[in-house]
Length: 491
Image (cartoon, rainbow, N blue to C red; front, side, top):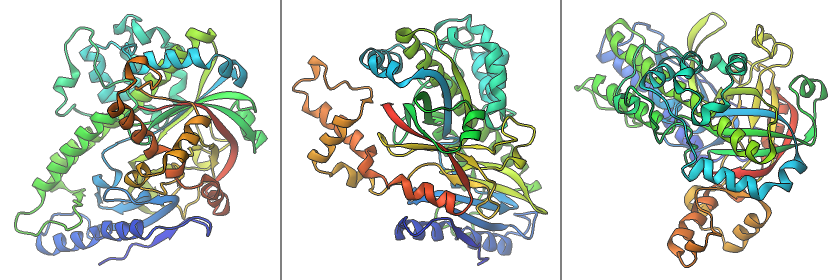
């Protein structure tokens, strides 16, 4: 087996879990699979040096589903689609506003009612034509910019400002637009020619996804904070979600395609991981893969944009018009074609985000600051805004969160007193309002509500402080500001 060097960027205050290490080593058995294919299937790969070449582990490293969260891989001669998971382009979007904390807290009950209506109770009104959906899936945010007028300003499109959105493209990784040649298996989603609504766009999804109203509690780097429009006491809006059902569609389609490609004469990989070669032999599958990947990624960018517009409506209906400027939007479940020194290959990130230096961000709004990096704490705890430092050894990567301390199953078992204390301290808004009169006596519904919140409560996650300190210690990113939650919206 070709050994891929594994580098850990985790200080001594962060526990490294054995089950995550074991999962990582199982994943890297992909190099054994490649050697076997090269031996028994000549021509499967065009490049004789095909392999996983480098692995970087970020401080929020923990067990995932086949690949640990917090893993970055650099491969040559192939891509490993399963190494980014099915939530393709799960990522973060952050808006800076001119609201202050008191404005929001003084009106929080009314804001909560608005959010619950817009996000969960039929107020999500995002009509699109078939052409608009196709443009979105093939061209991302640029496709939306080109076609948005077909919606005639109905519903949430009332809040879509063409000039602002054109400017915001520069604040999104790759302008939020990965070009796809086709839309594969998505005819039902594309829908009718005329305006129609669907259940996907503008949805948070489950798990650790959230939309949080936050306040800047402390500025650590005044010069960068000033350039990014951040100041203490100011309200910011942080979104963490991805491609939801469309990502799972693309992921399932890709995996099935890879399994069919795999030689029937050979034993299938024990780790369930299938490589997709960069080769003439599989040119058709290669093309289909990128279309499927880009369809899901473009949807995720659009989804975060629509959630931002939905929050603007929820707040402005109570507080009046306010300024909401995009700071940045970037994926942490994705892959990029990259050149490292003289080596052309592919960077796969699963639960790790890009953290490029100012020099690497030349030609963007971040050429004097470095790339914005958002590392949220658990629900109800502090999050951090950082600036990337372009650490080559870490494959220019940083954490995407604090990392789980308890599995979701174990988190549900936490005693009720601890959970009640959490609920008493934080405002959590989700589809179920436990105060509703018609839910009294519905212990089945309320139990399910409690269990879902327990899975993502602070006690289920590691302390974020040593995770952030690891980034400082290893020169991965510099702390710009610390933010605290005012209210958290969960799907």
